[in-house]
Amino acid sequence: MSDDSRLDELAANLADVRGRVDAACRDAGRDPTDVTLVVVTKTWPADDVRRLALLGVTDVGENRDQEAGPKQALAHDLPIRWHFIGQLQRNKAKSVARYADVVESVDRPGLVAALAAARDPERPMDVLLQVSLDGSTDRGGSLPEDIPELAELVEQAPSLRLAGLMAVAPLGEDPDRAFARLAMISADLLGHHPEARVLSAGMSGDLEAAIRHGATQVRVGSAVLGHRPRVG
Ligand SMILES: *Cc1c(COP(=O)(O)O)cnc(C)c1O
Image (tube, rainbow, N blue to C red):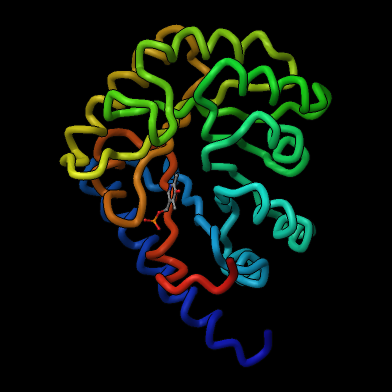
């Protein structure tokens, strides 16, 4: 990766995104160190994960097991936390539990059970419950009213650690409105599970709104990596 113009491109994009996060925190009266940047590397090769690690990125997100598993194997030497953020079938739980440090898309009891069984309790895995903000579970995510029961199930699994919530703003809705609802769901969860402090919300297009409403983690793909996928 010598004479690497891709490294320069990623460095410039990262500086941009970090600047946006800092500005949004300043505007919200929040400390920028309270917001973790997860760079979503789906569709981009392991070499980009390597470049991102060189640039100080500590967390990456992936949404397909078929892609994430081999990529993590190629980049397992890096000091990177791997977040699984995509819809997850039960039969993939075993594979994901091998390499993911965090699964952000846990949205139903069967998936909690599958992950709990797959993971070694000596090496507990962080779990975020994905909450649907559009009233439907079609695009993944649990209905808000089902979150308390899911949280209890995760708490009861020795191999899982309840870390917080994840959500995606519904298409076509003002993200500020959606993330305001999410903030209330998070406050409710924290009332019963004070350790579940992570709030994963905000992507390339709406990270400012998410930070205004308390996101502790933003998941940014295209603003860092660009729009042209390099691997399938
Ligand atoms: C792809 C993806 C992102 C990143 O989206 P960008 O708009 O490219 O920043 C964030 N969260 C989830 C769940 C995703 O699938």
